[in-house]
Image (tube, rainbow over all chains, first blue to last red):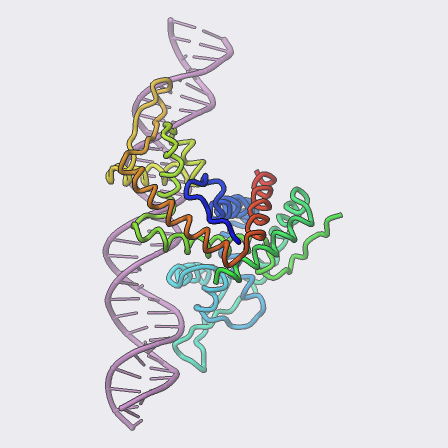
Amino acid sequence: MAKSPNPNTPLTEHLAYLLAQANREINRQLESRLSAEGVPVEQWRILKVLSDGEGHSMGDLAEAVLLNHPTLTKMIDRMVSDSLVYRRQDAHDRRKVLMFISDRGKALCKRLNSLAASQEAHILENYGDKATGELKRLLENLIDAAS
Amino acid sequence: MAKSPNPNTPLTEHLAYLLAQANREINRQLESRLSAEGVPVEQWRILKVLSDGEGHSMGDLAEAVLLNHPTLTKMIDRMVSDSLVYRRQDAHDRRKVLMFISDRGKALCKRLNSLAASQEAHILENYGDKATGELKRLLENLIDAAS
DNA sequence: TCGAAAATGTTGAATGTTCAAGAATTGGGA
DNA sequence: TCCCAATTCTTGAACATTCAACATTTTCGA
């Protein structure tokens, strides 16, 4: 039987808080690596999703990169200005807009992947192979359980 | 020996992404509970930290509740307007401002604690006692390792 | 077939956050 | 002691995000 949580638990023991703190820390590290290319983390995510070469609708993309629709629309506007991605209308459903990555975007994505990989390597060193794997597994399960 | 990460790892296998996703999910759940009192998650954190009755400087508080200084200043302004907290100048170091929780703030915090506790209970049920404990432990270690 | 409702994406206003600079105070070295 | 650098917090402008409303297209039942 699960013990019912005490309402007076300190902040630092709440799962929501620990997640926020860990996310903040890791995200900052990643951000500082990617800043070598002057690109925010969300743009790297977008490029990575699009780098399969397929067209992705704005809705799917928003879901995949954890952004709200209007936020994504405006971020894509900027990326289009930078010629990293481009829009095409979906031929089968003309409500939809399909996003594609450009050659310039692909090249940038490649460089960003290296920077991100070097961060993961850094985490693996400091935190350990085993703990990292275990943590990822637990997070995946939590995400499944929560949605 | 830690295996060096592949630069082409899918987004969904990156620790940074999993953390962001889990955090987003759990934070939304909490947010929707706390919305019964019309209070954002960050204000609950602030109240919780201050509910030890001690005075906390803005700097310490910002650290504790994971907000930048200017953001905290403005959020505190709102909370002062709502009579949830109040400012006092530190007698020993007059650069500092000490924050205190009001009676009204304490009462609200109590109600919020219940809402938050019910969320933790909900997670424990869906996700399991053991996994939750293990996840918290791993997150704490990660935070230590990363800072 | 027609029309109302749902789905998809964008826009503009309101709101919130961040960056850089400023004001006040403290701490220490010359 | 005096002055300059560091610390602490706040402010205002620039920037980003969110909410609600809109336009377009599709779906589906009458």
